[in-house]
Image 1 (cartoon, rainbow, N blue to C red):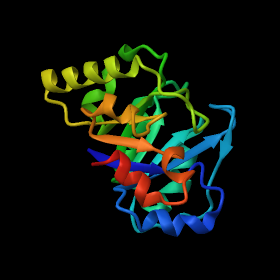
Image 2 (image 1 turned 135 degrees about the vertical axis):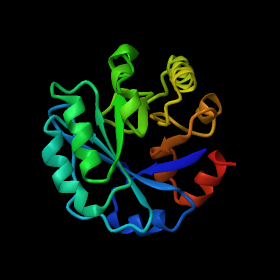
Image 3 (image 1 turned 180 degrees about the vertical axis):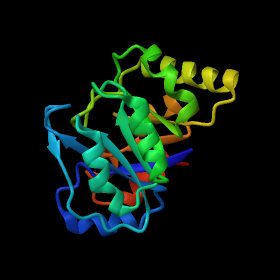
Image 4 (image 1 turned 60 degrees about the vertical axis):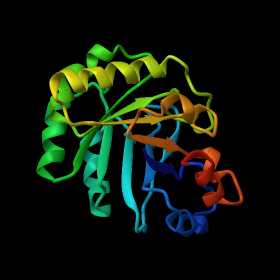
Amino acid sequence: MLLSTSILSIKDKNRFKEIDETTTDFIHVDVMDGKFVDNYNDYEQLNFNKKLDVHLMVEDVINYIKKYEKFHPYFITFHVEINQDVKKIINYLKEKNIKVGLSIKPDTDLKKIIPFLEYIDLVLVMSVEPGHGGQKFIEKTTKRIDQLIKLREQNNYNYFIEVDGGINQETIKKVKNVDIVVSGSYITNSDNFQKQIDNIIC
């Protein structure tokens, strides 16, 4: 299991360097436009040595891709729920040689993402409602993860399965079968980032 640490709850930008020096595999960058979700978060600079895992919770996906591609992200993930041509955006990211992630909210029917599974590199399963950090893990997420694993095996798909929301020392035990886990406030609300990472990734 790989760890992607969300910087959403880090208020002191001076601590970005501290998270970059931990053993986390990715820096998870939550971007919100205040329209797709009722919160706003954007970055003008991202100076990290770790691979960037960018999660776009936005309506105007293409324009945000254009903004964030300059940071050379490993993944850019957007939401299947947007009212746009999902396949067109997938193709756009592939043309940029950026690995494509597609995210799904907790209450969205899994059937909505199935037509795109053969084309993408990552499925981000939201285990909370997107938009705010520090929420409680939604238990039904585990069944969705199991379904995505089964679909991957049955169809020989190659996507990573990532879960995001409410991940801490206890809830991580429920998602041990995913490829990447996102944790934010559990790690970044502490005085010692590495200690918290060691507590959940062992």
